[in-house]
Amino acid sequence: MIRINLLPHREAKRKASRQQFYALSGLVSVLAGVIWFAGFTYINAQIDRQSEKNSFLKKEIAGLDKQIEEIKKLREQTEALLARKQVIEALQANRSETVHLFNELARQLPAGVYLRSIKQDKQKITLIGHAQSNARVSTLMNNLDSSPVLERPELIQIKAIQVGKRRMNEFNLNIYLSRHTTGDTGKGTKKPGGKP
Image (tube, rainbow, N blue to C red; front, side):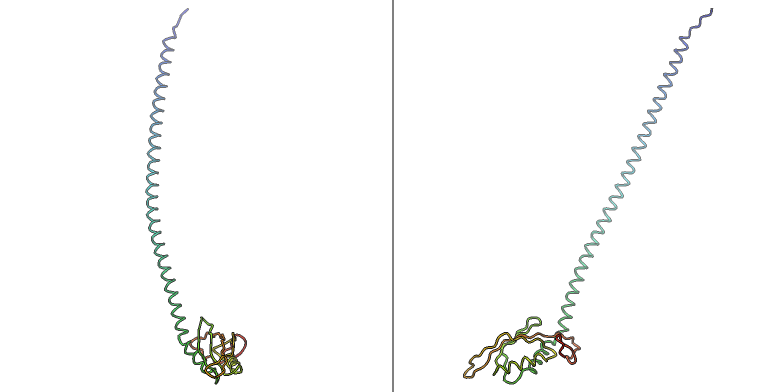
């Protein structure tokens, strides 16, 4: 019977398998290193690109913030100019108001009534004066009520006083000024109470 020794053959096979394993392990290690390096490089490139984008966006945001500040300043200046314009327009619209007021008071003042003080607070006008009788004060109030420029006379106080050697009545009354446009003559306009 022939005896064959298979030990060297098995040993050679084991050695070949070991070499193949080491070669595959080395190849896998190299491949893993290449993949890791490629991934690391790609991630770093992405981080650099994102950093560039972030810095660009920061610059753009800073520019937009400056533009917003300029717009706010322009808006404030515009609002200030509009407020000044409105004040000037109001002054121009009512610049002849005092003249109209004095003309109307002179027209509506009956004989025997003398004004000592005229005070205006916006549309409210306070008149203080002397009258020869209560009837003259009543006539003054009726005249003021029928005026196209003045409205709602309100008698605050009336009292008898001695002026020199004459007995007079001191009165205090409030009236309100109707605001008219510069082109309004006052004729044919209706006052808030329904009176023409």
